Image (cartoon, rainbow, N blue to C red; front, side, top):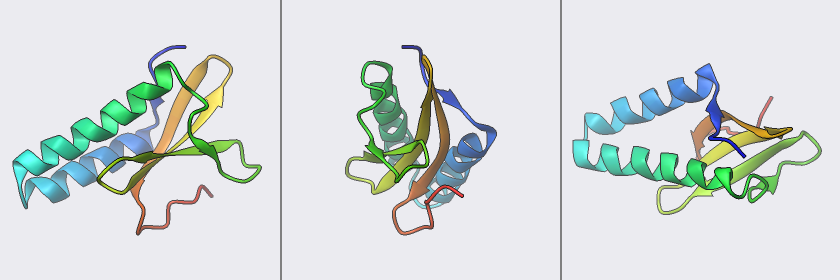
Length: 94
């Protein structure tokens, strides 16, 4: 399995998260982004470790400690991250 790919929307999500927390605490911002990326990198060895979201083909992986959810899909040998959302947000794929 290869390193997960990030959709433009998921990269926008990361920037939004980083911008928000940079304004509060840059060290916290770094820890959150690092945790999101580290959790996503677990998909390299365990692409189906996230829970399926209904019959949509999407899966979700929870980022420990920070309540973010990574929405992704496994397509052949590739893993594509679609969104990174906080659990309090509407994170269900459309």
